[in-house]
Amino acid sequence: MNETDLLRQCVLYFKNNRGFKRVFEKMKEKYKSLGAIGGIIVLTGLSVQEQEALTGFLKKDYTKQKSASIKVENFEKALDKTRFAGLNLEDILKEYFHEELVSNKEKANIYKQRREDFFKKIIDAFEGTLAGDWVRHVLQTRENAYITFIKRYDMDENRLKEDIHIVCIALNNLPCLTDQKKRLAMFASEISKNPHIFDEGTECGQLLQYAIMYRFNAVKPQNAEEKAELFYKAGILVDEISNYTVCCGLKGYIGGQIHPGWEGYYTIGEPMQVSLANLSKLDAITSPIGKVFVFENPAVFSTVLDQLSCMYPPLICTYGQVKLASLVLLDMLAKQGTTIYYSGDFDPEGLLIADKLKKRYGSQLILWRYHPKDYEAVRSNKKISACSIKKLENIQDEQLRQLGQCLKEQGDAGYQEALIDVLIEDIYIILEKQK
Image 1: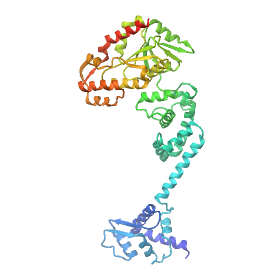
Image 2: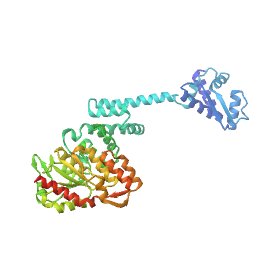
Image 3: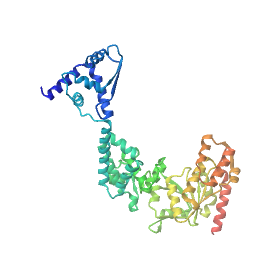
Image 4: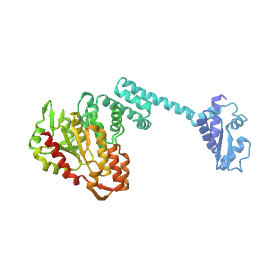
């Protein structure tokens, strides 16, 4: 009988005896962990079949044992005392399971090499471009989109390849690279012919966000407003209609000429609601007096305008949390050297807004009426919650930190509406000096 036939008979013998089933499964597991035949296998809860099979094969009484620890070496020695002597146990395992035996370490190395080859092909396809640099950075640093890359590779590498290619093309053709602004859907359609491929919640949309984060060395956006700001830097408009701000007394320019719409509102001294789409078309925005007064509260904004409308005061209302449209407007004013006066509420949330703006505009922004005496003058009887008070720890500006300490000590909020008379007086004095 040749060795091949003997091997088949050997495997048939062990398969026909159910008492050896777990023995072979355990030996296979041990091979995977060690990368070679050897070690000790442990069987617990021995069945009668297993007790009888082991007793007969290993010539040791297992009939009264509930578990067994077996050296694989002893199993090999017992094999050599049968008619199957000379057969290799590794060959028997391969034939038994109808597969090549691969150790866990070897399997991991094969997986790692295959994955590296997968991403290398993508990097090579975009070599020398921003997109190629991005993918290489992700793999080298294991940051940015790394976890997403690996998870999606394990789930469906072909789909991941398609999505990365689309995002790489998008990254290399961001509107900002040619000083343009494009709506997200239009940009998506140009890149992939699918206007929704980069929509919120899509896999390509998530990867595009990571790619833009790399381009601007930015951290991951924590909310929709921060995401809109990040995409705006890339020249992509997200929700450009509902993202708006309100202003008056300012002039917008396009092509070196004053925009007729802005000129009309300025001439009649009325406020205008300006969307992100409107702002993206302008080249510049100026304040005729080189200053602008910014309010958190719309009621304060409206009252100030009513009182001083004849003086055409340059005003902006942010409506609480500062939307991207307000930031873009302020950025354009700051670019012209405009001094920004900002006034808001005396509560942790209000101070955090002021802190964010101070960090963004530095010495160009004046924290307007943000002194302890101003807070004392308008302090209400509304208590600040402990959860809200804790937010004060995130404030960075020293002036605001001192004011935050007053809030902690007193525990009461103060509101911008109570300061309205002094705010109007401040603006009046400044405007009078500009005449």
